[in-house]
Amino acid sequence: MKRAVLDEISKKVGAFSAGTEGNYSHSLAGTLPCSDMAGKVSPAIAAIVSHFLQRDGWETKVHNALFLETCRKPRDSRDEELQFMKDALAAWTKRILRSINAMCTELSLPLARKRSSQQAVLYAAKWDTLGTECGSLKPGLKPVYSPKDFYDVITNIKNPNLCVDRGTSAYWGMIPVEVDVKAINELQQMFKELDPSRYQHLGIDDYVMSEFENEHQALGQRVLRSGSVAAARQYVKFGCPMGLRGKLWSMALGVVFDDFQLSYFDQLRSSVIEYDLLMDCIMMQDIRMTSANDEHFFVFEDVLHQVVLALLRDVHLTDCKQQTTRLKSYIRGHLGSTDFMVTYPPSGVVPFYGFSLYVTPFCYLFKSSPEIYLCFSAFYQNHLHRLHNISSHCESIVSLSRQFEDLLQSENWPLFQHLVSVGVQPLKLVFNWLMQAFAGLLDSFQTFLLWDRIIGFDSLLLLPLLAVGILSFRKESLMQVTSVAQAEAVLSDIGFVQVIPLIQLALFGRVSDG
View (cartoon, helix red, strand yellow):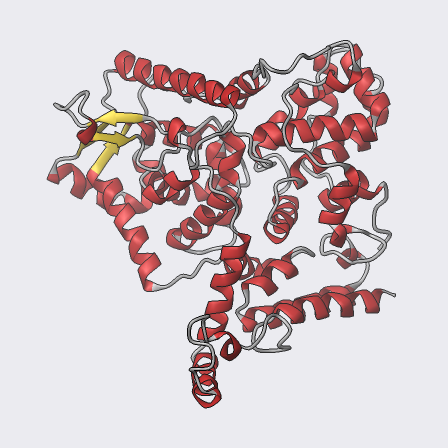
């Protein structure tokens, strides 16, 4: 049975391999004529063009571009449609703006300033040792906000058109607004490849079957040779070998490390050297307080500085932000003039406490900061930005929180009821897990296994599933708690939980037997 399952996975991956099995799509030659040119391109010309594209690898590039475009999710840069969400966004943006302005006033720091030529030269010389050379921070500097602050904000979002009866079990949770959530049968269909009765997975079956691990490794090499984004995404659904993970993640995310992309990082580096932002100090302090204090991540301190400071200046990231959530500032001397109004920081990303932990998994996978940055920024644009933005999107932090509460109520009602009855809101216990995508909370290997699936399935819904799985796994202990402190103590040591069995437990009520 296990061999048959592996063969089925191989067929699935092969079906997406452009130019190999030929099942991914029709030949590009058959797609050349457009509606007004049908019949005008001879088969001979079409064959010549198709051969040229295949020979130079362009057919795969076209397939990849089409695949990424069809998988592209609606941009959050579009205006929010729900008025009560707009109101919550506006209030949150004003709160962040007040916090930043108050910090500038208290510490007598500008939002941004241009370094002198001498300062820029000195800063450039310190580029490879930013963590140690630029470690002195002003007293009083603090994160703009924390996950706890954000939890308080989203749990107080109210829909004035919805009358909520707190006495009914359907609204015992903290997210009473109606957002798009999925029933368990829909989730089982979305993540059917996680069914332990049908498929094998790296992170479970490789512990007991060395043959599976070897064949999975060979299959990964075959996917890399194909160059197909679709094949890479299908493959990483089942986990990546550590030695191939960096290449497979970058391929699945559509990242290409060419001269153009690498030169773009150089431009961001030049901007870091030329301009000093208040957000730089906040980001550097976050690294010092979180990643640099962790025994697993402190060795990446210098690289983390390079990556997150470049991130603050990447204007392409503003596409992830709704217009209403981008903080605006004015160039000095032109206050109030819309012609001199700019987004601050340039990327629109306002870091929260623990933001730098998002980057740490990528530091294990790539040798250079440009490669780390390019892959991380793609993952951030695809997924992570939704975890600290207020939106009605089906994978926003609001929807993921509601998804968690609905799943726990429907699949483990006695546990949910007990926790609420003793004054413990389940969402409050796991909100930091969701917002951090478990980065810095799990063992690094388990974080990799989780993010493999997020990339492969192109979905953050795995986060509430894992949270439900962890609470269900600790049910016996949680049923004994009588306070928030006791519940937090039960869940304080999740570092070495096995993520795939727990997601399978939440989805199918069973785990792989190897």
